[in-house]
Amino acid sequence: MSDTVSTTLGQALVFSAPSGSGKTTLINHLRALYPHLRFSVSACSRAPRPGEIDGESYYFLSAAEFKRRVERGDFLEWEEVYEGNYYGTLRSEVQRLWARKEVVLFDVDVKGALNLKRALGDLALTIFIAPPSREALRQRLEARATETPESLAKRLERYDLEMAQKEHFDRVVINDSLERAQEELTTIVGAFLAQPPFAS
Image 1 (tube, helix red, strand yellow):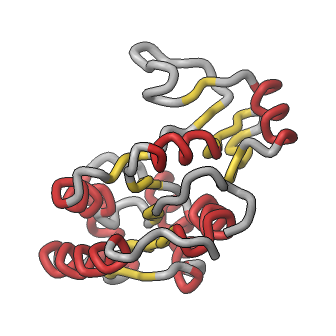
Image 2: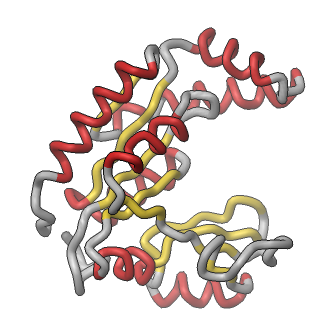
């Protein structure tokens, strides 16, 4: 591994998927099997919302502080999601979890996932969860009854962009059957976690 995180080595699981692919259900299944999986707490430049706690919900930074820490090299990955609104993963957060012998769990968009892979190398396993087809995804989203025609169209457009990147992931799991997808994912993750952390 490069000088991205150098004090303690560990492992990371990086998930990405189009909305409606069943990713959350699959991740929860893994967390029940492997209690030492821990979500990374992201940093952001927005103000806390009611009930949010600094260091638990997010690490809340001002935009100026966020940019200073970017320049200092404190982030493994970051992006400006909206103008002046930054989100990212602090190296110190990954180090904190690795020092506790925990496996870092990421649930991020495609761009963030690939950036984390570049930063962490073989210490990270990237997994893309895909629906069986575009039509199946459309049906799942419609069944939620939470989408307007406009938001549905945007999600399907985003699906096309995300699916174009799936070949850059270490593994792709097609969630056509929840039971089968759970079994496949358990096998993939179990094999990865059985390997000792090592530097690339």
